Amino acid sequence: MGNRIFLSSPHMSDEGYEMEYVKEAFDTNWIAPLGENVNEFEKELAAKVGSKAAAALSSGTGAIHLALRAASVEEGDIVFCPTLTFSATANPIIYQNAIPVFIDSDYETWNMCPKALEEAFEKYPEVKAVIVVHLYGLSADMDKIVKICKKYNVALIEDAAESLGTYYKGKHTGTFGDYGIFSFNGNKIITTSGGGMLVSNNEERIAKTRFWATQSRDQARHYQHSELGFNYRMSNVVAGIGRGQLKVLDQRVEKKRYIFDFYKRELGGLDGVEFMPSNEWDEPNYWLSSMTLNGHVRPIDVMDALEKENIESRPIWKPMHMQPYFEKYDFVGTGVSEKLFENGVCLPSDTKMTNEVLERVVEIVKGLWLN
Image 1 (tube, rainbow, N blue to C red):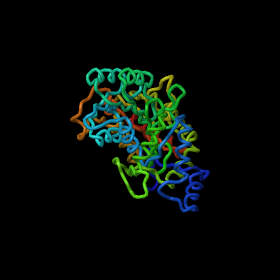
Image 2: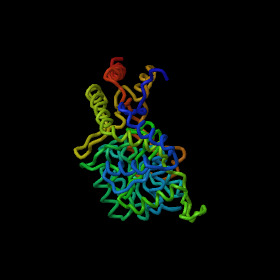
Image 3: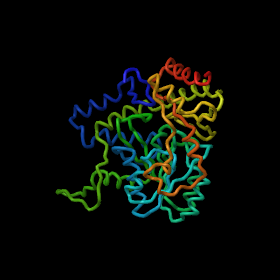
Image 4: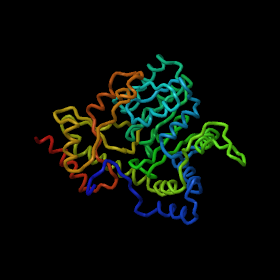
């Protein structure tokens, strides 16, 4: 791709932490299936976010799937899910043959609207679980959402795939619900090339998910399986990359925040531009710096101008209730998510970007207001 500037690409540590752990896996010939790196990555991640237990898995999607199973979601059960998210949040609901009901966003957080969630409970009191997402590293309003879920006594799963390093009122996102999930996909704030983690304070349920994730193999000399299993465990090599990346998480968050502040300072005064919301209780990781446009310059204009210069950007997530596969399922809300999709754009937020690159992006975007 030449000198292409990416939205958010893998960024290995300058210190080479990752290679130390990967080399150890190779030197001991313990590259798979499990090993010390897997065990330690689980402990280190759990300690970092303040959770009692963690299960290292092959993807964040797999982590959501196992969280739904751990929450006893079965065929025909209703699960509330934000509509403004990536499809990986909703797909595992279908894996369980359950029924998603999509909940709208609010402008205050860009995340699940507590008012719409309450309306959904009134409409579907038999709901089995709620999945909440922390979009682009912005925290949802967790006090209100947790209170509603406790009121109706349903399991709460936090999709914190985009928000590792984000705090809500001084506490890590992903640790407020019954289960939290993180993703280490190549574009996330830290990466293992591909992978995920399921966290919970319920150590017994995490142990159960590890069992399911290793094909539900019973303790027996022969291969015996009393439950349905999955091939969801993280490899020892991949976990080694994760251990090294975890050491630079704080640096990556600091750079993401720097990028957001740079864009907001340089572009925030342009006509019709409004950046992602900020709240006094939220310390975002700003995984992707995003803005909405409500003037003569449209998101497509920004994306086209950047693409001409070999710079990647993207629209805000297209809501799930507007997706061809999911449009048959119910939606509760007033259309805030549709407006955010219509008017939103994610700017390049790669932590390897220099000031020179940031200035180039800003210059291209500003130029659209001069025409």
